[in-house]
Length: 292
Image (tube, rainbow, N blue to C red):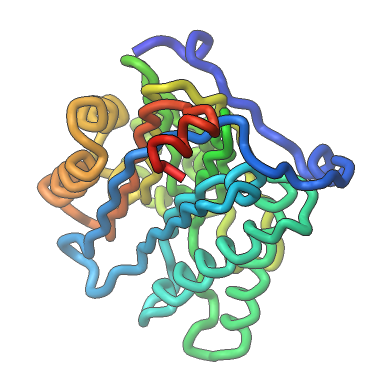
């Protein structure tokens, strides 16, 4: 694996930068369309009684939506018990997708930010209104593939990985107590892995206030993106994830990674989305082959 300096290709965007973008008319059609093959798999795991993980996606065919919002893929890991976590993850994804594809919002990053705040507001409202759902919440990690870029929005400790060639990069930063300790140099990765506080989340959908991280990843043909909950990363190392993804089709890779997590203990629900960017097709070519 290459070092971080060699594969540092993402850029984090700040809220104040996004909100100062001027309004513009939507593009009539994209210049290029990512030609994607994807696979997804979710599993209850070996311990939990219900699956609070959820994934969802939307692949529009309308030229304006493809140009302005692209295709979105997302995973959530709910929390709260007694099915509340499942409800939180379902509400968050439904709201995220609906709000993100609102073309009245001026740009992609503002749309992502607004969509997360909308999801947070709804989950929090339901949690406060129904006693049995008090404290429910969810992580959320989503990728919108728009023309030459992947736009990643992230809250919690689910993850997005980029695999390019033989290098694997964790795009997102975990919003967890132990990883914040690691980033501050107060704890090693090994200590974090076995810490009794490793499941303490510092940001989630459903909190009083939440600020999502947003990243842009320039796409290249051959890139692979993995979105996953911590049910995978607790049991399967980054390098193993990359090896499986590079040697299997997306559907087979998602299936195989879930099976590996179960074989290593399956202590949590586990969900995986694998995206393979086969090519970046010019709009006219995408129409010719019937991709759009």
